Each structure stands twice: as C-alpha cells, then as structure tokens.
Image (tube, rainbow, N blue to C red; front, side, top):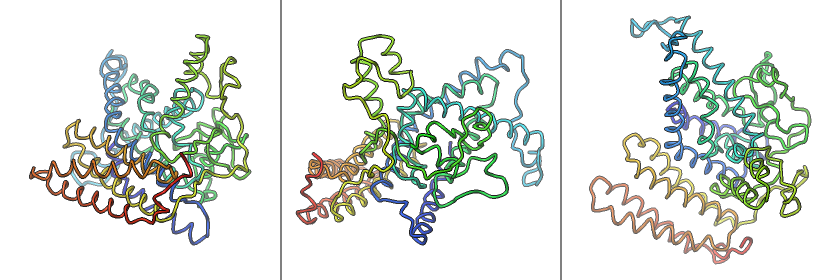
Length: 432
C-alpha cells in the first residue's frame, strides 16, 4: 500500500497541471469549495485506512494461510519473484519471463475482482453507502479521484478472498491492487477527450470513466472497470460516451462536510430499516438495490428518483475573505494529515487515532464554513482554543516541543485572522 502514499506528491503535481491546462482553455472544471471537499474525503480515507488496511490484509493473509489451495497441497505455489532481473546478480538488467507472466495474471485477477466489487458497490445498498462518497461531487476533475470513502474498506475485503483461496501471495495482491488504484487517478479528467491507437477498446480511459460518473439515464450503472474496460465489454456493462455527462448522484449530497459525505446513506439505511414494518423489507433496505424503498415508506420523505439534468449545482454564497480563511485551515490540516501518514509506522495506535479525531473535526468545520453555517464561526474558535491548550501542554516535552510550538503558533495566528475578518464575513446566516 506504500505505492499509494508514495504517489501522493505526483497526484498533487498532476492536479496543478490539470488546473493550469483548464485555465488556459478557459474551462471551468474546478471550484474551491468542491475541490477542498474532495481532498477532505481523501484525507479521511487515508487516515482511517491506516486501520482498515490492517483488516483487509489481515483477512486476506488468514484465508491464504488456512484455506488456500496450496495449504491443502492441491496447487503449486505462485512465483512471486521480481520480474526484472533474475535476482542472483544485483543490478543486472533483464526480464524473468516466468515471473512477468505470473505478475500479469495476478494483475488481471485483481482487476477482475475490482470490477466485481465495483459492480456490486452500485447494486447493494450497504456497499453503495460506502462507495457513494466518490460519486457525490458534481464536478469531474483529478481531485475527485482522491474523493474516496473512509468506510468502504470495511466491506471490500470480501471480494478479494477468492484470490487468497487460490494462493495469490498477499504481497502481490497488495502491489497489484495499489497499482490498480494509482492507474485510476489520471482518468478522472475532462481535459482528455479520447485516447489514440485503439486504447479506448481495452483500457479504462477518461471518456469511459466520465460515463461511469454520469447521472444521465443511459449512463446509470455502466463502465465499472478499474484499469481494463474489457470486463465491461465482456459482461455487458459497457456504454460509450455520447451525450454530455451530468455529474453527481441522483439524490444530491448538498454538503461540503466530508463526515456527512461518508455517513449520509448509512443514516438513510438505518432510518428506513428501523421504520419499515416488514422484516423482509428491512433486509432489502440493507442488502437490496439502492433504489429500493419499502412500500410502507413510499411518500414518507422518499428520496428523489430522478435527476433534472439542468438543476443548479450546490454552491452556497460565502464571503470571499472567509473562503480564504477556510482554505488556509484546510492546508494546515492537510500538512498535519500528511505528516501523520508519513510517520504512521513509528506512531502508536492511540496517537494515530488522536490525529484522526483532530483532523476529522477540523475538516468537518472547514466544510461547514464553506456551507455558510451560522454556527461554524463559534465552533471554529472553540477548535482553535482546544488546539492551543493541547499544544501548550506538550511544549514541556522535548520530543514534542517543535510540533507543539508550531501548532500553538498556527492556532493563535488563525484566531487573530478570524477576529480581524470583516464583521459581514463572520456573521453567517445562509444555512442554519
């Protein structure tokens, strides 16, 4: 999984490149509030992923060790050598064709398992509750690629257990899965129309994935591919991009809060499962199609079933000075989250959990500021005061002194900035 963490600087570089190209083409593909919401979801996903990855890999390793075909002696072990070089002479160039072939098969199997996971994530409600985070943006750009669920990993591991049963080593699975996710980053763009040289036929491309994110009726539940579009072509779920794509979800999120983005469909599921009278319907609310609604609840706050393609995007009007402040707070939180990820291997579990809690509260309030919530300013002052008090308590400890001083300075400077904002920027009433 370190492949993904190592790719983060490249992701941000490509975001800057896309932004520059879009500006030169005068394409409106980025909005500050939407992009920060995307990145906030990605931060929560990566931080909570420190724990959920242990679940995924732990389950995978257990099945591979106890229930794999190799453990029963009915299949040979996989070749898990590095495919470049023969391993006996460091630095020697060359290709180990046997290992290369095995790694190719492993990547194909992981990509197929991802297709199955992705397809069921659109057709089983509880899986959709996790996956919906990625689709809830009404834009389509490279920051949307980082808009990932913090909770989806709790369920996704089940779909990779067949790979453990056939004995695919966990190191190969983890590497292929990470490469698969990294590949999918670049296809989340509107700045590339079609790929040349027949690549559209077998690779998942920006055009194919734009279709997947569309709420246009003919685009619903199509193009589930990870890296290879061949699975969609084989299993009848392929749809070419024809008409302009309208992005989002059929029941708009209408929030920049990354916490709500992660839990809103789970909340719907729990509410409907509790309120419906029939046990069969309770089951279907959780494990049925996301579009299912019990007959005894139809009309009782039923969600929208169609999306008007000309509907305005969610874009609350917030004073520009406050937007600048919220963006600055986001980037401070981003730095803290990145340093936590980089040093997670040397941190205790409770330290990571504490940072996850602090970052989550910070990102949630940044989202509330961008929404113009009337209570967000008071919460922000309380958040800054809490950070200042906590940082002051750690200054006496030499190993934390530099970090504590930086946190204290940032919180005090932020409080001064917030106080000095024009009164109109600190008195919000658009959303209550």
